[in-house]
Length: 429
Image (cartoon, rainbow, N blue to C red; front, top):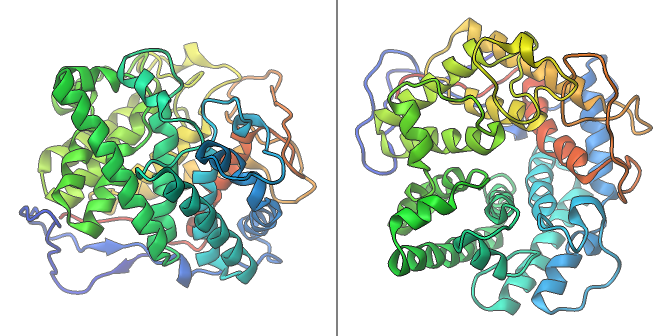
């Protein structure tokens, strides 16, 4: 692996004014996607995969992507919506669009494709119209009533999971692609949800808020800490804290391996947010939490191929032979473990080897080197022989389920970065 090291003994102060940890390890930074180019005609599969992903992104229709957002906002919605998880009666509708915003921002940074730039800007503009039509800052493809149910601890399918994807997509459009409008929209969303969380706490209790988080909320703490580094608005920092899920991070703080039976991809993003809290505030506890978590997963809950989870959950530690099925190593968890590895506290060869192994496993899950496809893309890496259950959905060309396409969109940007042989690693801070 190649790294770009900042020269000298620079100590970068946390945004929140905390004291950075002292250390002699040089600070290392990620090489920008703008500085990495892959040859789509070369021998390396990653270049061909990037080209396939670019072609797929260019196939997606703006009106169809934002159809449910426009309908929710009471605006004219020409065309027809996509199917799969984006179909109008799916409670997770809209999260694909968040992934699209992130994927296009990073793909544009990697290729500077002008057509793609126009498409992603058109999606941001359409979403801006939807948000302004509502007048509250709320932006989603489903009604705010979903959050009434969430806050009342009534059945609803993970609305904050979708909101996180939309917010992260807008943040990536601003940070990676330089779209100022996306930042304004993101701030409006953060302010809206700050009001909702404050209302729950004032009307009921902080315990009621924590209880409501016993649901998949994505990386809400992570995206809000990232937003705080841009706005320096204390309200965004406080809101990020309120999504830190102490009932889970607390177990890691006392270094208890209690991961069994937890839903893996619900909780890895919470740890990523905790690590971002360290990056922002300098609080060493959250660095220790992330380090312990990484060590625990990799030593006790990871398969030889590098991934983790079985049927989306963690099983008993060091008993993975009992959990060899056709639904192991969900690719969402692989991506998020790669993201967490990007905050590695020191440069170590075993960490680099682990990252490369995860990338290879992720590439095997994708197998999308050619537009015509050479086998299906699946959410899971199959550790035991058995049938692959692939859903057919109403999406153009590649044709598999929205979730599988989401995996394609959400993962290849990081594979692109690794293919350039650069990876995010930080030293002691």
